[in-house]
Length: 116
Image (cartoon, rainbow, N blue to C red; front, side):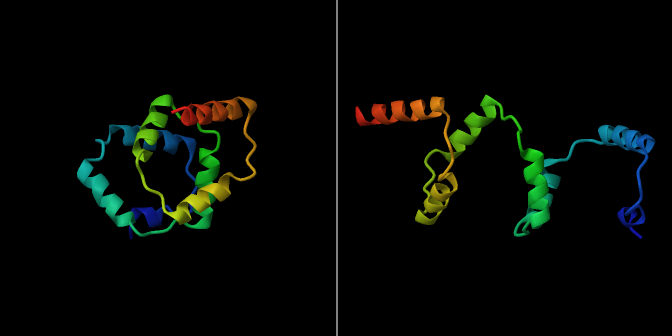
């Protein structure tokens, strides 16, 4: 019997949690090879709606650093979007109220683009 099945459904005490935490910190970090193996095993698997909801709740209100925003921006520069993807993004943003400050920035940038 695998260990994960043996303890399935049992309550973990605070003391056990502390011990598990200490043990996890002593463990060496995962190698790139191990990470790649796990990544490949997950390819093609779809998350359940329940999992998607849990992740959504966890990530709500999470503050992204400027450095992370910059990395995301650089990763998206030059990507070609299909007409279908553009339509989906357009639909997702329809009805979203922008703050006065944001609207002013958009107008300013549009004027800057036209002046070129």
